[in-house]
Amino acid sequence: MLRNSLLTIHVLSVVVWLGCGLYEIFIARELKAARGTPREVELARVYLKYAAPVPVATLIVAGTGVWMAIALHFGFFQLLWLGVKQSLMIGVLIIFAAILPMFLAFQRDVEALPPAATQLSADAARRFARLEPWLIAMRVMGTIAVVFAIWRPV
Image 1 (tube, rainbow, N blue to C red):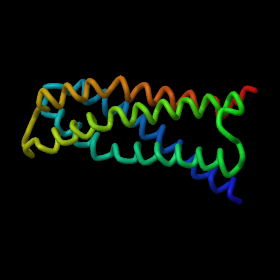
Image 2 (image 1 turned 45 degrees about the vertical axis):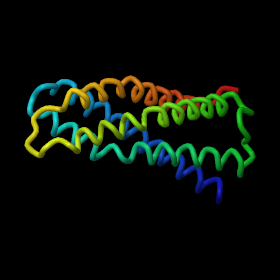
Image 3 (image 1 turned 120 degrees about the horizontal axis):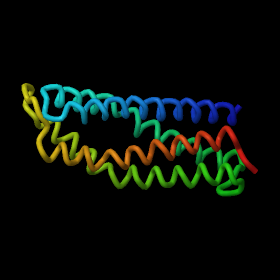
């Protein structure tokens, strides 16, 4: 029962994490394409409004993964496929912790804009540009982890 419950929560969180990541890719592309247009601020606000599930799902994925490793005696780095997933998640969490202050600063920049603003500030645009490669790296790492969860090489 514990295994099935943890696995269900883990898999659902992965679906939310990667699904929101795909949505983020779409909005980020639109936001970049809208640079300097009246749509830019509106897209940044939409991006931030719906970004909250990503860190929550990331932490749930990590937490349920650790819980399963301990409670179900999978251990850490005992099997190739699981060790790769665990290593990738550690990388994701390190990147997440490193970019969180910059992401929050981007959020503050956008929230500080007046309601009728038509362009991001230079600081907000610069922060978003600096965030994007790290967000892509986390998505790639998550996708590789899913591949190893399905493929499970010995």
